[in-house]
View: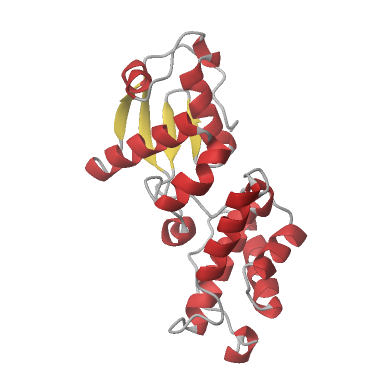
Length: 220
């Protein structure tokens, strides 16, 4: 299934939630400060506003809803002229290219409820000041030195982040290096990336389950 829908014009899209137990647990709401600060420079303002409006609608209609394209375009201040090359359709296209949404058919769009943390390559697109702030944000998050975080929680977070990086196009080595930058112990990072590779290869991947990693694997 291609990421972007080749046919246009159309007036409405059916929008469904795109469930992902990993990113739904570890990701960031499109209306969050994280998305406003860091995803904004990657996705662009119209795409962020689109995802925020979709998040509002999915809160009200968890099973899905119908998106009026012209009305939504006007609401976020972008045009519909130009068919599938219009500014609004490019916003949808951009959400798909960055893994926030995907087409399920000619008239159905699945949209994530949460966005994953930026990959290293995505963060490098930000101004240097925001790159530094993003790194500080990551360092303030759950790390092996964060009080109260259990080994199981650290393992599941490492696996979830590794899986999201692979889903966004990072290779195995890049995903493992990024985990190191997020201060996961190398043994835990290695285990997480191996788990993520195996998880993605399964036709129906199971939810996160605790692995047999000793507590010492996440200590400095």
